Image 1 (cartoon, rainbow, N blue to C red):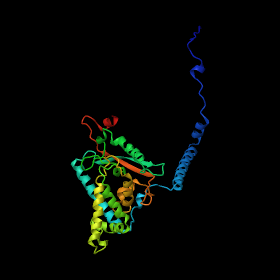
Image 2 (image 1 turned 60 degrees about the vertical axis):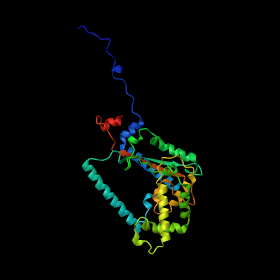
Image 3 (image 1 turned 135 degrees about the vertical axis):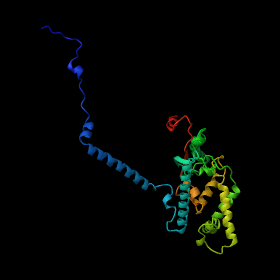
Image 4 (image 1 turned 45 degrees about the vertical axis):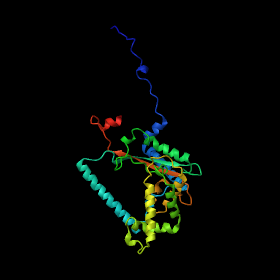
Amino acid sequence: MEKFYDDDVKDDDELYPSIDPPSPFVVSVVHNPLLVFGTILLACFGVTFALYFLVLTNAGNPFSDLGMEMDIIDIRSKHYNSLRLARQEVKTARNIATTAADTTPMQSEIAESTYWAFESDSKEGVFGDPSSIGRMKDTFDIFLADTGFEDYCLLDSNRKCERPLSPLRMYYASSWDSEMVQSVIDNLKDPNKLKKFNTLGWCYVLGINCENAPQDVPRRDKNLVNNIYDKVRSIMDSWDMRGELIEEYNQATELASYLLQTEMFKPAVDFGYDKDFSSKNQVSKYSRGILNWGSPLEIPSNQTVKDQLKE
């Protein structure tokens, strides 16, 4: 019988090339999966514990703990919580009504937030010189100065973009009355006047907690409290971050240090300064800020949400 051979047929080595054996690491993972997983998990816990230890040994969180702002037993805390819960209840009811009517205003709700934390490497702190303040403002301007910012910002009740939560709103106020600011500082520097403002302000200005307020208060004390409140509110009305850096930036820092001592205005300034900042130490090594983004966004009728995200 005649045999035929095909010269194109490959040898076995060509048909079945040799495969390199797996590395020892792969073999160990395959044979000991639980051991490898446990080792990685322990390493994660170890790194977390090490970071936590470093934070504790370096004076901890540089900012005030938001959970320690009020004494839960204090009657003022109870009144504040009642007010907060009532506002939340009203807001929930309005949201339900708005949803039912399907008329939620565009960009009226918070969708996302961008958070900044700043640290100074100089003894003057983050608010110690115009250059440092300006660099922080430049960070926010990445978004605020963008031509399309109004299409994504959180809109307030006047349908204008809300400003970031930051002390820079004060340093870049649209107007600054140095005489009025100094008048407030001089009043709050006086321990007796500061005590009167904290004791009488809630009742004789806002009408809150009057059952625990002193009775038969002299007219001059009531006028003092209302005068301080009206001036501070007038000053704060221009904190919009829409002006140039004020020349009296040191005065702004001093004002913030005394507002921190008032129960009524502390929440307006406490967020942006570190916990060591005070009237006796008007240097803040750290600062922070939050920029909120609006929702829902306006989508053209010929697009879907996915289409817009792709763009």
